[in-house]
Image 1 (cartoon, protein in one colour):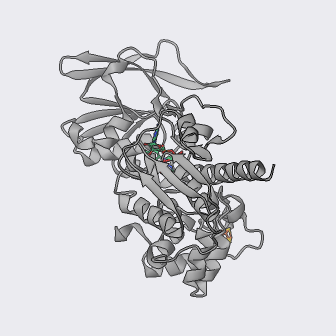
Image 2 (image 1 turned 30 degrees about the vertical axis):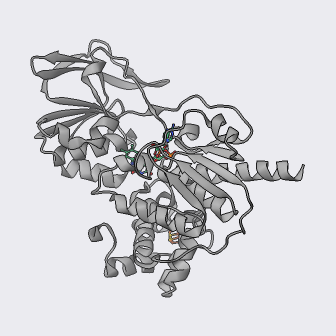
Image 3 (image 1 turned 120 degrees about the vertical axis):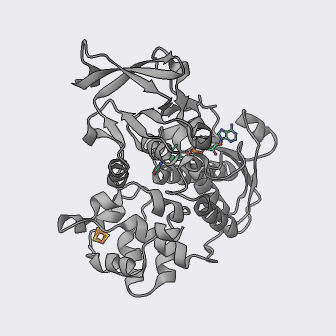
Length: 392
Ligand SMILES: Cc1cc2nc3c(=O)[nH]c(=O)nc-3n(C[C@H](O)[C@H](O)[C@H](O)COP(=O)(O)OP(=O)(O)OC[C@H]3O[C@@H](n4cnc5c(N)ncnc54)[C@H](O)[C@@H]3O)c2cc1C
Ligand code: SF4
């Protein structure tokens, strides 16, 4: 796990490259308002405890975010990028938390307020909501249908995000206050939780329903959730095709390579520069010799003996996204496995003033830091509703 972080010289070099910008563009770009300018300046002066406190006051999942936050937020805004290249802010953050958070607890906590909140789903949005609510003195119980915290983060391969990192953030949240979790406990109707005496419910259930490709032979395609949960079960696949152009597709592609695939092709409807992957993910795809078949849509997947044939057509940008080019269909033979790595869909919300939705089930497929921001905001909203009821 050690090689995921910056070593001492790298860490110091990154700290020293920071321009200490008065306008703090890195902070403005962060969905949870974390201030890299502030924590970097503390770290530069050797004030590591203060640096960690600066991160943790805004983000309970600072460790996980540090390892997987995409470069579209603070790094994109970092003014150092105008001189040479941006500070690797997420990795500085991950390194600080990894080395210096240890037993730190956030002490700014209200006394027990006697109210109970149920949170359904222990992904980043549910975890962030729990963090806000325990600090406000609520008793919090999380209901999680799986057997671990982290939600969709658990599908990210361990070479990028070891599960202990998610656990480390969860342990930090638990140290702050009264948060209990029950695993293997699926909640289908949040109204029942209100009937059981909870004062409010946060629904942070992520996007649960896979999207259909709407193509012939859909049943021959394996959803990414199934593949990334148990990639070893597909280890015999030598020629693998992946449908999708984002970080989920990238994770599937690299995982397939790690499982011994000789050839991995990623079919992407867009142009290469429109793919929703970070620079680091793109470099990984190229380094691992993964074939990026861009401006290409898979339109049929059919069985051919014990193999799969994939029919694709070429696409081009149109007024409303990419459109098929006429008469461009070609057949590509001999695949062992085709994985569908495109988005999911949220469930229909239950409407009630004290039931608030948070994270990907509310804002659509997002990023960890946006899910954390959404969980935090939903918890604050629920708190204001419950406080209004109390004062009415
Ligand atoms: C393969 C992959 C790679 C990714 N890579 C990145 C990345 O590099 N960087 C990044 O920022 N983001 C990445 N993401 C996106 C990120 O993981 C999500 O945006 C984030 O996890 C969403 O958080 P959430 O809490 O809203 O939902 P989820 O993480 O989906 O959590 C929802 C939780 O609710 C539980 N649940 C659902 N229904 C019920 C129910 N009825 N009862 C009880 N529990 C229930 C689920 O089991 C789950 O634990 C990736 C996602 C995937 C799938
Ligand atoms: S924008 Fe970049 S260089 Fe400027 S303070 Fe933030 S991290 Fe430092």
